[in-house]
Picture 1 (cartoon, rainbow, N blue to C red):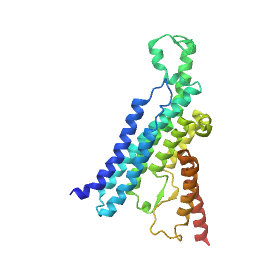
Picture 2: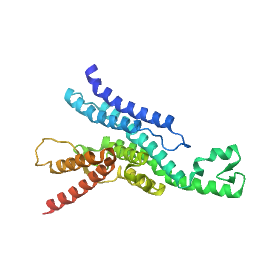
Picture 3: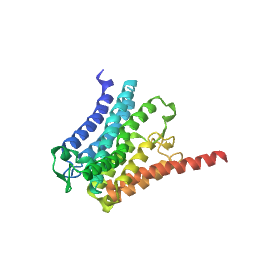
Picture 4: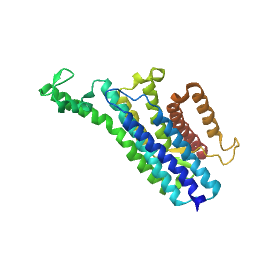
Length: 280
């Protein structure tokens, strides 16, 4: 009985990491002090990715695969790789809006207290117009962050009933998307290589929207599952792995967004070459 629950316990550690990451952001974020100087949520997500990989390996090793484990794994992934990265992007886009003078959406509480906001009396028409325009910009830019957990849940539910995804993926895997967004947050927070200045709120919102849609896009992506460690049949995996390791060795964690983009591009190129070979 205990043996059957070991993979589920490992999966629960994935869920625990996601929950702790959410708590860390919720209690560590202050809209007046900017992005919290805290990498814990990001490291927790990488730890969760490790548990997400290990639980399936443990289940196969112990020969205790079960429908319950499959459902539990997806539920944990919704929290860790859906809700948590969505929250990270909500915070990041919000701070980007504030940096570009659209911070009225986040300063409504000052209006309730009365007085002045940015030198404009809160009872004036000018302030009301600023609130409305700032709120509109804020809502439009923040919507993609809300799509992340929704489309993550949709993708995971579809994955559980889609028999075509046993050896490859259709659409970007939820953990890959979650780690991509988490490391984008890392780059912004640390201003790695001066890239934080590139993230205008509209650009960041657009990036989040594209990757949220990729979760459910009908694009075949290869899986990093080796049936045998031979070159033949695993050429794409070995090439991608070599490029990924090289990038991570040079740029460390800041390279991870590039690695995910490279994964998508490599899959698309592989799909085109495979289709052309089949046609020949």
